Image (cartoon, rainbow, N blue to C red; front, top):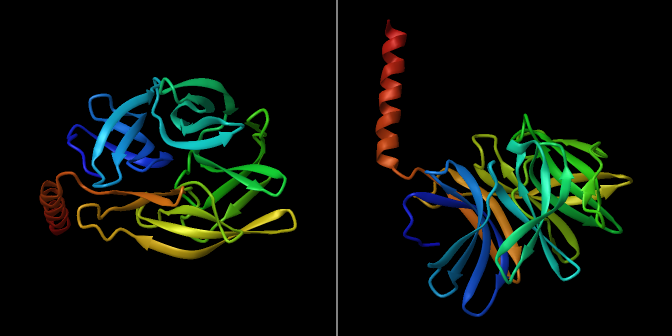
Length: 264
């Protein structure tokens, strides 16, 4: 996506809608002057991927990100990440006014990047949580779909061999098989995307790696950390250094300083 903003960045894209001309996204918007994340709606041209419109649709006193979209009974609900508030809430999104109204508290746990898994007749929330959001432990909670609340006691904790527990987007289905996009945080936060196959054995879920991919964009070389699909389109986000030359110079100076200390 191309845009003219230099005082902010956008991340965690979820596809709200698609038409012949535009891709409409909900994203985290981070403006440096506010120093926190807000949820924004972006209208992006399908022809050239230029940002045509940006509007803040949800702001709280705390940081918001990862605006997970839940479509239910012809209504749209958003579960943004708000772990800094030590709680997770559900908001109803009004398409006519481009605004959100808090519906209820999902949980009083500091969940990080929570997603919903619809499995047969049961619903779950999948999430990592503070104080180890980018680590090896993924928690599954029973999700009351009607009341939109969870039991704060997890029904399963999945421990991975590496730091691939954090969600990277919505669970998707291909040919009847369920897949979970996860973040590869082994090197750093959001270093890459891991696609995991979801299977159940008895009452337990298994997650097995199918594919891992990393950013090949020279400007966004720090990694990918979001992967979402909707209406035949896929959206990902990459991250990199805004001023890469300055970062390289800074890194060289830090290394020189370290070498000098070691010699002394």
